[in-house]
Image (tube, rainbow, N blue to C red; front, top):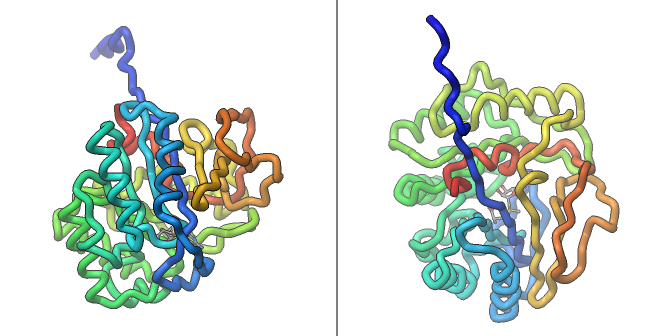
Length: 292
Ligand SMILES: C[S@@+](CC[C@H](N)C(=O)[O-])C[C@H]1O[C@@H](n2cnc3c(N)ncnc32)[C@H](O)[C@@H]1O
């Protein structure tokens, strides 16, 4: 049978820009794989800085992720400010949280991304969560249609499959993003997940993501595939009234000049010195939240 002509003009798939705002803040957890975060946060100054960053972007053309290097859920005035900017200006803002302040921290205007390493306390041992905390996170993930961010630090495959099955049983309609324990300073990845033996579900990343993980694990470098952060993303760092900018922190040893102090125009780079990371930004442009 002859193939049908491809449509003309070809369909356009425009995606938003992705701007990640990382607030320097304290954390209420002591995850073993993360650095200890302590900070004194002036929420008024922080909100003013976030406001200056938001004002640079058209609400309809940008997805903004706000997270703390500590825990954003511990700062209700920041969440209130973000919710207000959504109401007043129509921004699309997602917030990354450890979920321990649920349900009090929920602001229905915001989109949610929750860090959790499985459906049991044992899988969340490195995060120090109790089963009751994990249960609240999963209940809210389903109710809020939140995305989940799961660090793969060596949980047994059967446990990972149990997690996927549990989410499927609950009718989870978000996106389960599994990322390897980061190897800092450009070192090789130490954790690998066997995609072929992983239960498949519509909320998992596409196969290409896991194959790229295989590649980085085997070769100790990212190869030619460009992460969507480099195409569509930029990071902003807020420390009260201080703002810094950088295309990506990429967990590699980066030349100093890539950190920009104060607000300025965003440079584009022909090549970026990526490390060995594989994270939520990889196929960011495929997320429904990024569609215009
Ligand atoms: C630093 S936390 C801060 C945000 C918030 N408190 C949370 O837990 O989501 C940001 C994300 O980095 C992840 N993370 C921290 N250390 C990591 C590591 N060594 N490898 C991979 N992911 C890591 C956390 O699990 C979390 O999803």
